[in-house]
Length: 309
Image (tube, rainbow, N blue to C red; front, side, top):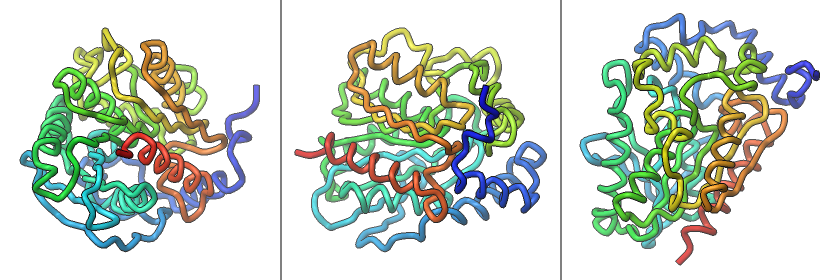
């Protein structure tokens, strides 16, 4: 069997080596508040510079802070974006660059939601916020000069989990969801897949960190709830088309592939993008990892294809 580290691209291996040399304390050794500060300080170091856009607007959506990014003043389709961070860390600032890039490259507006975080707000608070935000966006898009009939939902990591859960809400409420963009999402109830074992240590997202996030967010007895583990939903039929973006050297890759297969088996149109030799969170490493740029373009093309009139 190939040693896990030999799967990494030279650029990705170099990034991990620099992170290791920086010797920052891992999140699971910090309090949630300390982890949020640490994540915000480092979140955009490897990301692309914040691209200027003609419209960046802070607002409140369904009781949560939010930020709208639009690449023009036209009546654009819009994607609700849910940031990653294990349901415990992350905010509008940590994903500002990523949201700007998605808007710039796709031509769609992006509405980033600062949903409630654990442990102050445990499961299903983040899910409730995401669902409320999508319903709000559908009802109020016109007031923002946007097209509420052309909606997408997206997210990375824990945000990908929330986006997947929100696609069920859209289906069951009859909201016109054109795409679910799932970037390195968690979809399973427990970290038991082969990739969780193979990439448990040394690949950015580690087993101890996953356990720390989960324990802050959700009780063990609730982890088979499909809103946390979309793989365990009874019926995946009729969900919005999906673009699933995965990293080969990620503990979550197996459950991401399994979710794409489950959606496809249920008749959902699925575009699966698997990037070799990179880790979780690679899409936010555009300064150093060329696969991040390729993935951003794939996400943008998916949005263009599904949100066009």
